[in-house]
Image (tube, rainbow, N blue to C red):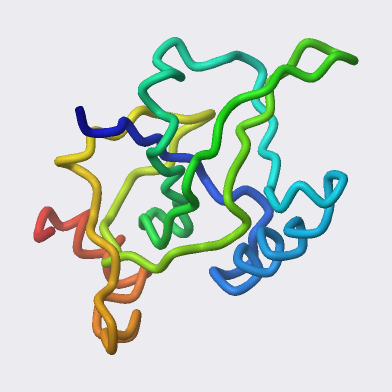
Length: 139
């Protein structure tokens, strides 16, 4: 069975590079666990299907990269949940995606593919242009 993914806005990221830096900065944090922790109020109903999937990041109304999901863990102090992520941003072929609150499920067949070796993010439509084309119904 193919894994289920999720999408989430890269809140407070100023660029894809700043998101990558935030993720990588967590590699040695959290007790040296080598994972980034994203907090959410509720455990996703379909969380078991998401282990082995990825969190796809939205920046400027565009899916820009993904971080593999390791698992989920409840925080003792307030009952919220951590989404445990590999602390890396894997570049993908960008795809327009409307902003939304919280997270949303993304089926594997709807997920954009990773950029191939030698393929550059510059080979795809820039986020602002993709957003304008989306508004016009052209992508």
